[in-house]
Length: 430
Image (cartoon, rainbow, N blue to C red):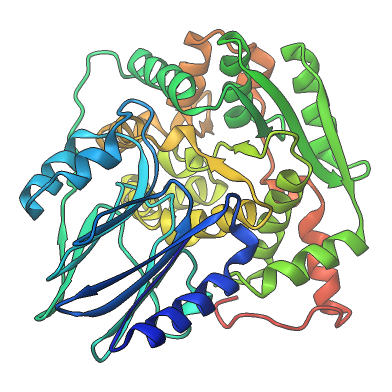
């Protein structure tokens, strides 16, 4: 969690930062630290979770990160002396992070390639505020774009891209993907974790590999009694030889969950509220507070039904839509899912979205994602093949899957709550 304000006086900056902190208290897991700094730009007040800040009397660095392959990442950023050096380091480090570096003359914001860890900014005249969440900052708050560095100085705000995806050209994309997924699960998935599990391809691959790597996992499925997700998750857990934690939900606890989320979520369509509710309930019922999910796999590998329909209409051009969805993932999905998990004091891990997998997805041809086999269009073709190479049982590799909000029965309940007038706040982009 970060609450940062640049103001014209120290008391004012402190007061505004405390307001931002209070509005985000639902996501604080550890104790908090506070820092004040007088700079040429004005007075800075920063409140953040313990162990996320490096400081001396001239500068501050806040960083929230999961970069298991580079342990001393914060120290490396701290020691950079120029934007060029910062870009070079970000270019070399795979992982998920958001950061703010404050010196006497500038405030530098940066974010990973995909935007898993939230960071939002608002500038009015010469006053600046930043927070993990958009809603507390009020209207006109904007997320820092993934893969960019934004520099605020006397001259105003300037944004530059530090990230351009590298084109990956490999002889055997299937085995390369299998290897990268295995590395990702090994490095990013905590030794004890809870997997948001519906028995579909994405979560089954994660569970299969985590078990193989000796991680202590619990599989959690949320749904209405008798829903298809319960049936599929139970069968998948049996095939994998592990236990399943079933969380049955009904109208009352969905109502309570949606009421708490509607206050803090920037996007509030029925689908957003349904998916956020599922993630929040998984997190609330997790024994580990480390939630692992297959987020991004559909955008990476062409998993949605809409892509099949588009493919029938516009052919190869559908790939442009898939790539656009991947680039917008931070605002369409990740902001919502991370917030739903964080508001239950948990942490979200998305192993499919590491940079090497992301870049492979941007490099491969459409037929590796959507492929016609015996007159049927197979979605996520390359992922199913990679699953085969990884030894994932056939029943789990080939199973078609309903989207979680439908397969769980949660969407139906949320829709009903609105129709009955028990929930009233709906966003305009519904």
